[in-house]
Each structure stands twice: as structure tokens, then as C-alpha cells.
Image 1 (spheres, each protein chain N blue to C red):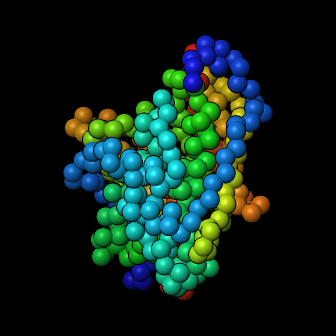
Image 2 (cartoon, each protein chain N blue to C red):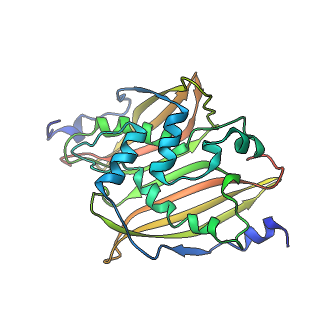
Length: 143
Length: 143
């Protein structure tokens, strides 16, 4: 990662961020519940999830958002930072026992204004969009 | 008064954490492992870790037996962060949550909670975290 004095002038609407794939298993959900102090049992128990109308254990929304923001973090150069981000979860993502589910994250620059790049965020699992109307804003370096 | 009516009285209710949360390397390592995250020169704390601290002021809603809110009736629908600066290891932070909006629906309601993360003891805003839940009434569908 190097400082790029022309970064703000080089980033253009339409630029694509490197996509990222990851797999989420039920073990990951347990680890996240502990690390995040999120005790909602819909991420840990099929029985509880079904009792509240869900198909079974579902993924934490914040695992999906964190995954989407990681492609933005990887795209930053020195002295840049994410200043805001907003996501809407389209559907609950069931995580079955066993190998889990594969997620794909994508991002695309939609605007550059006053040294701030807006990035549209996408997450999919098995061609099902998990996020709608989701964005992050990055303050670009050397503005 | 029904449970749904009781929850409506929580509009505008505020909760504040009494003790600051200090961001430790141990907590970040556990959270980073759960989401497969690595530090960058820009972010030494995963940006979404702000939600973990914010939730310390949201848990109180569920711990209050009068609130009528039950944790496993919640489905996370949207999440927004506005960071004044990236959070850092060693930051001491208090959180203040406010139930901002409740949109009652048939069988479930949408609930918006906003949380300010403040530096301790200087009380400068570090991050604003806004979350929306679908709150399922007994037997109702999620919105």
C-alpha cells in the first residue's frame, strides 16, 4: 500500500473493487455470537429460529456487512478511511449444518464528490442478493 | 395494554451504558477471527466493531422486563454507521441509545434505534450507529 497523491483524481464512477468470496458455517456463527456478544438464539438454535417463523438458523447480518466492508478496506490506500456505510438486508440467509454457505461480495464506485467516493455494495449467496440499496463512503487521500 | 402497545411507549426512551467499554486487542482478535478480518494501515479495528459497542446500550432494552421487547423476536433489517474517525485499540467508549421510530404493522413492527458512541471521559462523538429491526409479535410474520 503506497500513498498516491493523485488518488482522488484517478478514482472514477464505474470502477470496480476486487470481489471477495468466503464461506460461512454454523461454527462461524457461534464464534461471531461470542466475539460480538450477540446472544440472539436465532443464530444458534434451529428450534428457536423456527419458533419465530424463520426456516432455521440464519446468518448474523453483521457478518454480511463486515464482509462487504472488507472489500472496501482492501481498496483503500494510506490515509484513507471509510466515513459512513449503510446496508439493508434483503432476506435472511439460512445457514444449514455442514459445509455452510458461500458468499460473494462486490463493490462499484458510483460517484466521486468533494473527495468522497460512494461505493455501491453487493453481497450474494447462490445468486440470491443479500443486500439492497447498500453503500459505503470513503474519504479519498490527497484531496 | 397489549405488548405491542407497551412497546410503543418506548419511543424516545434512552439507555446509557454506565461504564465505558475499552477496546482491547483481545476483543478485536476474537472479533477479527470470527469475520476473517485483517488489520490495514487505515483500520486497526474492524469498522463494524462499532456495532458491538453500540449493542451494549441496546441490550438494556431487552433486559428491561417492562419493555415488552424479547431478543429472539428481532430480525436485523438495516444498519448504518457514520464514523467521525476509525475506532482504535485502547479507546474508552460509552454508548447512548435512543428508540427513534416504531412503525407498527400487522403482526410485526419496524423499530429504529440510534446509538451514539462517545469517547470517555471527553464525550466527543466517535460514531453514530443506527439499526432497524423487524420486531415480530407473537405468531406474526416478519416485515
